[in-house]
Figure 1 (cartoon, one colour):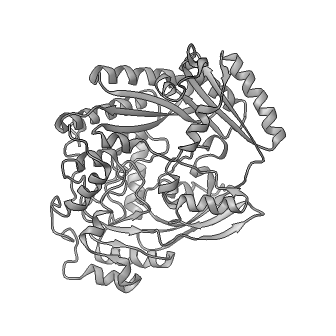
Figure 2 (cartoon, rainbow, N blue to C red):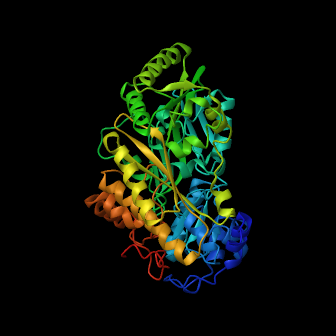
Figure 3 (cartoon, helix red, strand yellow):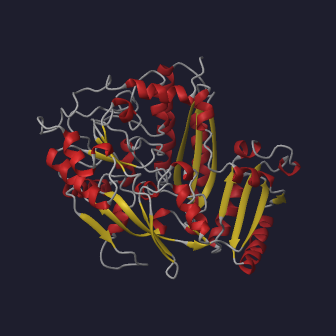
Length: 516
């Protein structure tokens, strides 16, 4: 099979243009005789309204693997955006949203396009609202350990700026170098040090966002409230379907004084999971807990004798005040001994840390493989069964497929299982339905085991068919909230299991495993 490099995939996206669009630009709008570009130029400046096809094509996709697969055959999952708008302030975002409502033109907030579930893919020439010009730290509150930042700030720049002042934001996802702070909150993300600092919903304590009618929602930054359901939690994770986040106030932490790394070889996966459970249920606050299955361990531990008869690895990193780190390390080593673990050299962890923000998806894409990742949440009592069941079912339907997993977000009651699935190069007509079937297996078994279909990647477009299974009656609650807040269905239609706009492209048109 001809190898297809990632640059070629990007070029394919750029060349597709409107060939796959099913209707003329703005054809779904109730307003047909206005020039939308001029309307928005009056609000944010002509230079911040991108109309040419080449510019718009760069906003037609995120990092959804399925979209990369479709690009190999010269196809888009959705359409091009109608326009790209680049506001600079919360007030400009509000003005743009009000104008979009007047013109009945839907829009999608855009950060840096690092999502992997198609959350920003336009389905009917939506406007793309690029927030990257909103990229400043507005206030650093040292006494309360809070920082206020604009939503479009680059994640790595944000963390670097805090580090220079002696702080960390605590949210360090693999996508740190290619994502925005607002995107973290919009997708309810989780960083690699979540065992200590929490996921983004534990870090964000206040925000500003624009509602579909253009009103500014201002949630004051406070530790806790007991004044009804949490409006903050409604917005964090909304993926642009209910509000456009423009500003966040987040907790920050002093950079740790000390750190201790413990790398362990364990006899099996069950022992590793028991170790993670013991650590978290004891009330420890490790910086990192990473537990690997046999396949992912083997690729990281070559030449280390301890893994010869103990093929599963655990990386535990503790940090904080030196005395606390020392005390927690004693407890971790006691737990390790109780599950027959052997401590070994730290090289595997050190090598992971050097490349922790690098995705391996590109290398497989270049070679023609169908590589994807699926992260789910399950309670400890179901974790081993979930892994074994998914592995066995995938082996049955796709014997040549790769399946592996690690567990890198741990809690007292359960764990995130982060799975990699990979099909070898094959005919696209065979690969796409098989890829969909692997997703169906992993997601269906997660629900059958009482788990959640998404831990930190969000739901976007691709997980839409499973949202009713995830939430049950709660999904109807969310649909009613969406209909009440956004009666025109202007904000990111067709995502999170919400309905698309009329005349939108059906993104599931070739996923035969789902009934729509």
